[in-house]
Each structure stands twice: as C-alpha cells, then as structure tokens.
Image 1 (cartoon, one colour):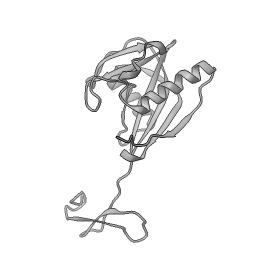
Image 2 (tube, one colour):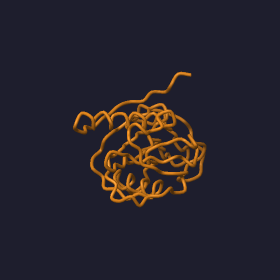
Image 3 (spheres, one colour):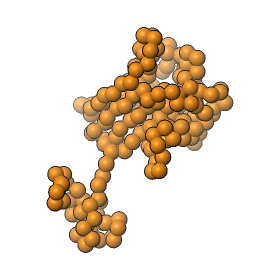
Length: 179
C-alpha cells in the first residue's frame, strides 16, 4: 500500500500508538489501514453417497477439482457466502447442514470455512469459473487432481466421518509446503 484510501496521501509502515503490529498509517489524516485475513467459504454438497465437485476454469489450479467455494463478500454471512459460491460455481441449490471444517492458512492470510450441505435437486451446471461439475463416490474422486490441500483434507475427513457413522467439526492449520 502506497497511498491512503481515505485522503490519497502517502502512507508509512509503522506501529501505531497503542498497537503492537506494523500497519500502514496515513501521514496526513492518520488513518490506520488494517489488513486482515481473507475468508474463503464453501460447501461440500452431498447427494446420497456422492459429493459434488467442480473442475476449475480459472487460476490458480486451472483444470483441477475442488468443492464450490470462494472469497466471502462484504455484507454477507458465512452461510450466505457459501450458498452464493455454490450457486455461482456449480449452479447448485443446497441446504446447509453444519459447519464441517475450518482451516487456517496463516502463510497466505486465509481462513477456509466449509459447510456440509444437502443438494436439493440434480439441476446443477458449471458456472463461469467451472469447466464441469459432477457427482463422485469416494472411490471415483480424482485424488491426484484435487486443487487445494484444504479441499483434499475436507473430503478425506468427510468420508472418514461417514464411515464412522457421524459427522464432527474439524479445525486445523495448513502450513506452507517446503519446496
């Protein structure tokens, strides 16, 4: 950040009085510009013994499979965002059952919230960000083509919980991979 979004003046990177972290602070109007993690919300749509996945038509991870999810918008709840993303990416109507996974990705300042959801019908189709959408049983999932670790872990927990006869809530951290 180089300029203040309030007055257009230059900003500096400093620790404001009463704070303990570096922030962008306007030299003219003294506005403190906080930068916080992005919330990613989505659904794990269920139909009988299958889950609905989307093949990405955008980067990152073009052509790989994911659950319908995306960045939460201002002025919406996590559930509203998850429903919106599911409709946008998969053209699917769902009813949210429960919050299923929460993953912290501190190295990219993101938090993923994935909800178990029941597909209301089989009337779904790819949206502009998806090449295709399809239902998969556990043994049909293209595990080597899953776009994100958060999604792979969510799917693995889902099938493990289903085999164990009950769904819990799972929380975890995903760290940067060493190259």
